[in-house]
Image (cartoon, rainbow, N blue to C red):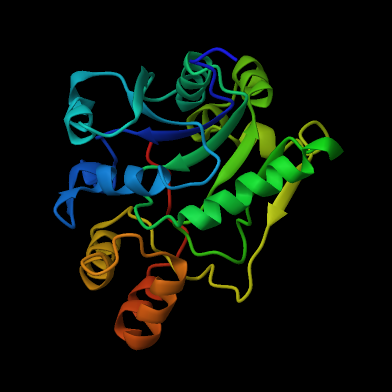
Length: 253
């Protein structure tokens, strides 16, 4: 197998020009830019062969490069608005066979949850499954969202998707065609989908900082269980997560 062959690749889309919270990926989080803390978590996902940051083209986004200095991560540049094409470039650059999609505004992502989605996809592969994801309607909190699909599905979407929404959000073309791309959806109990622990707004960011301040100093590898325990001890934080759970999330492009 060639040294540069990476069959399972996590592609993390990012940009600096978020409409709700510009520059959010560079905001400080536990002594480092948010994007760096997020990538550190992605690197702990089991059975990945490579982590790639799919960064928008243009000088406005260049600060992200410095924020990732020293991390074992590849940076691939592509269209800011056509995120589907940017993903396809990243997949081709790494010769990916399996693609994991996560977004850079999820610095509380749990590596074990994402690994569960990858295993669900891999285990179901012989049955023809081409797409796996956390449930969008129940189960894990907003901020743990993970999708896994075969690179061939990505390239087919790139070639055929014409709707602007499909190209901006990468996977709607795939997930809306279950007859072509059979899927497995991973749910979780208890249902905590009403928790919002991603970063779209200033309120989201302040909550994320509070969670990191409480957990990161003594356990940088904290995960879902530790967040649940924190929310049980700090109902004020849980209340913020629940109050902001209205689905306003538009993934960082």
